[in-house]
Length: 414
Image (tube, rainbow, N blue to C red; front, side, top):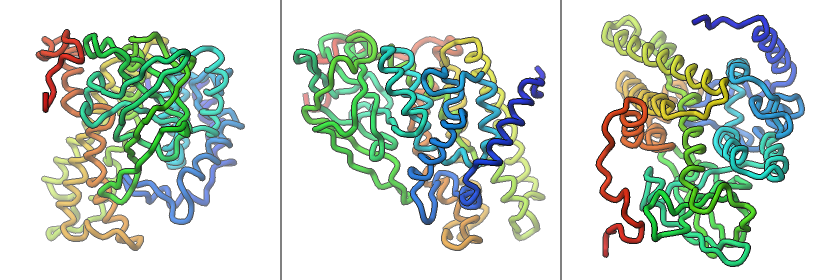
């Protein structure tokens, strides 16, 4: 396979590079370049505010949500052109963090199941950065078992009344809208009684409580719903077909996370090239070199697996279960690299204040945030099951509750 740019792709890359050179907020370049893996923040401004300004500028220039149709705020670009843009955007891509869930997960779901009116109204505002979306899936009692959710929606006239709780919702505290999956029929097996909606996060009865993380950030939230009214017109897909709708979101989520997740490999190579151990530079140590070689191989494997997904998208196919591979491997690598870097640094790894100390401390922040990456978008165990059953074709895991009505599944305390 030839990975060189075609003449058309080379022209697209040159155009993108020229636009970025003329429009990028270069005053933040140094800070963004130094941002610790797993902890992106600006010293004097909020990342959401700066990100909205950058997203708005990109939208005006025709560079936001490139692969979306033009009528929904995109450019109608090919998947390959989207990859080229991400390569050229470089560190400024970190400013798009607040919009990644909307662009990579919520938008494609609305595009697949929403009405034409909804798509033309909501998607351009998502693409331009005017609105931020979040994804309301995980629950305290269900975790990665999305179908085990207990948030219920009951039909009243033309509306649905929602009560329940979600957890680990990224960006809920600054989001305008959210995708919400609920249980509308507890009398059927758990995968069959679900229904998907989207809602205004400022709706009466919605309460967002930020969760303080070990690395000092507050990116995740608990979200409570108390008699929240959602019009039936904001339902995505048929009543009871929420599981099928959620698969579109989940497959896009795993592809999005797996393709954009920084594993720390380039930073680790640079770090080992400058770190002095007792016997010399770390990169000259055979044991260190062996570790680096192993991670380099995995990193390239992730890259080419991602190209498979891009090829599928270019053919108009829905992202498939193979995208779980990238998410699984990158999440584990992130944690392994951070832990090994901390071992090499010793006590220096705990420093995080001055510029010199920040370089040492970036792996501490990476280590503290890395467990969340092995949970978000599906735990390692869930992903291994998906890969085994749907990619490798191995026998399915034993699921004793598969055909049992949800309200008949034994729970603690019954």
